[in-house]
Amino acid sequence: MELFMPEAGLVFWIFVVFVVLFAILAKFAWPVITKMVDERASLIDKGVEYAEAAKASLEDSEAQARAILAEANRQQMEIMQEAAQMKAQIIEEAKKAAAAEAKKLVDAAAISIEQSRKEAELQFRQEVSQFALTIAENIIRKELAGDKAQAEMVEQLLNELEHKN
Image (cartoon, rainbow, N blue to C red; front, side, top):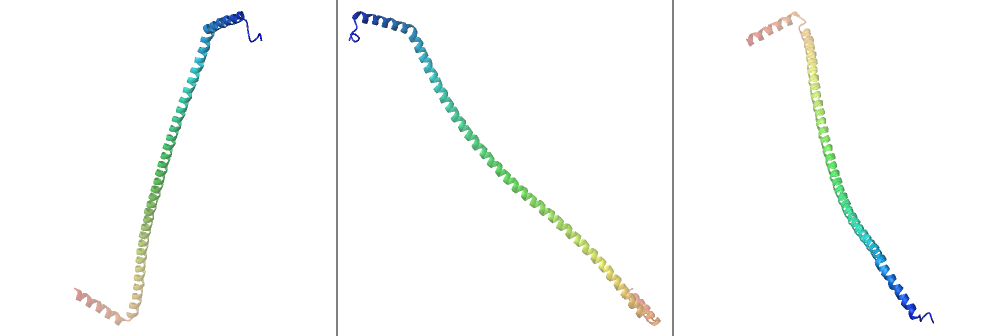
């Protein structure tokens, strides 16, 4: 039971040691401890601020990335539309050029056919004229085989000349 009931002198010295130790700790250790706790609190506050700033920066970056992606998609759509328009325009121009070239070819063929027809017609006329002259020559030779027929023909030609003048 002595443990639970210390003597008055022991209590006094324990109290004196406690006060001296408290004074030393209060003078030297307590400011260092509070300084370290304050620094740690400051470091934690700075870490929290840094984390909040990083989070805000990340959110801003994500928003910018979404905006850039949206802009890129819009530009892609514009480029695709322009490409489709250019494709349609090129096809239309190619059709027009092909139609013009086909018209030129048709016109050239028509001209060539017309020239060939005229040449064939001229040749045909010349051949028909040659055949007609040959036939007429043969007929006249046959009819003018005698001297009497020749004299009648000369007489007839002279009469026609007199009537014309």
